[in-house]
Image 1 (cartoon, rainbow, N blue to C red):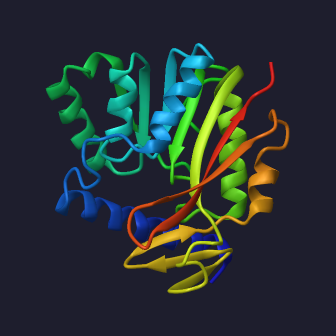
Image 2 (cartoon, one colour):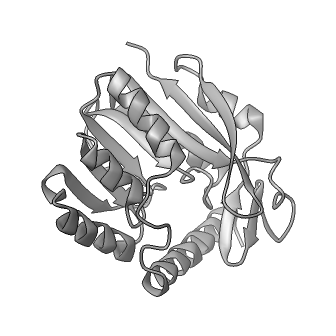
Image 3 (spheres, rainbow, N blue to C red):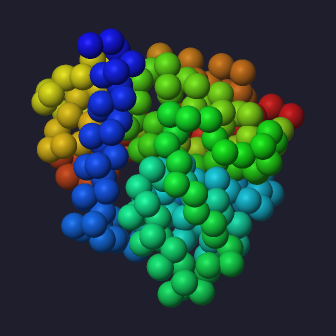
Length: 223
């Protein structure tokens, strides 16, 4: 089987798995924002950002936080079920007017025009079942849609994580545990993705059970 066919099969299986997971466990991550989103909001406010694009928003705990913190939010995910839960929560919270959702797979170009958003946030989206080439293309897309001086905050699990190198290997530093495939980042990939940006701030942190070991990366597009 060709590599692109394997990538397509993994992408389809992961989308199905996330659809089932959100349907079975609605609001699975709770209603409190991630610490990464709290950090991102501070960065975005400092940069005088008004509109935020969140990639991989899921059921939307962070998107709702951004909307409640005064930003206009565009939230994308490849799970319609997750985004339906986000829309329902936004209606309940009175934030629907500040938030729009789009079903989108980040393996495809972002459905936005050039230089149209002030900030982009992605919590553990870049370390999903994406190939290194797909990750690089996605970051290029983020640079395309950001306005000059725009901030990009993302988090990824890295090769120091206890799950790295275990479970089902899909190649390219992608390993699957319990149906969830993760691309574990080596540090040189983070550095490569920061090429052409202002120097990146890389902050190590831990989250959840095990615990998961992640990097929070903050980088800014030059003016």
